[in-house]
Image (cartoon, rainbow, N blue to C red):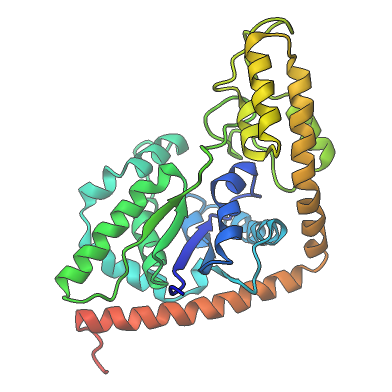
Length: 335
């Protein structure tokens, strides 16, 4: 039997997690935790790069994110869940890696450029935000992760991590650092319920894992479909229609969904019928998630204890890698 690989993934604690998070990475984590050694990081230090004026938000949402993890089936007996800022080795590794990348490369990272535009920084980009891709390299390499579940928009981050790993190993004649590989979701990015390309808290177009049944029903009822599908008998567009995208992600009866797509495309199938079917599928998925989340939420101290224990495990693992990095660089002065 082949040796288990190591996985590193995580989320910024800036809000509760939504269906886009589930499709993009959470589902993969639940699956992969049975196959490999998995570290899941609550990236509070990274969140502070653009929320330094409101650290209370980060503190509040650490618990919320942890509850979402546990609710979808991330098992602390199989997965190490930890808080980024409480692992001392990570900022030190970041410091060393910063010397292995140019400022020009950081400025032209397409993911960073897109986020700068999305967040409206203009010329007031926090320095911490500009270097967060290097912090991500530290996160990945600290645990010698060879697999990193990401969305397509994060692939440039993994490419940059590979570049730094190769440069470090070449420069210091070592094989201490492990090259990571991106693991992308088989489902395309889930659009917002308003039809916009991305589901996000800031756009107010998300269905959250913790939303009540009534809230989910209201959101599905108001979902964007095909604006040209004015009458039931009109042919409708399936491609780019969020309702069908969600059905592809969460619907269990693929044959029925294919029939509905064909019927909708030729006309004679109303949006309300398709939305009702989607709602039934979403409620079937979310009901057990909500129940599990509510149970964990009754004992927040137990959840924080899981994070404390996971952070201790993560800190020990990262410290071992840091010691190897310092030795490779020849800066382990008293060893």
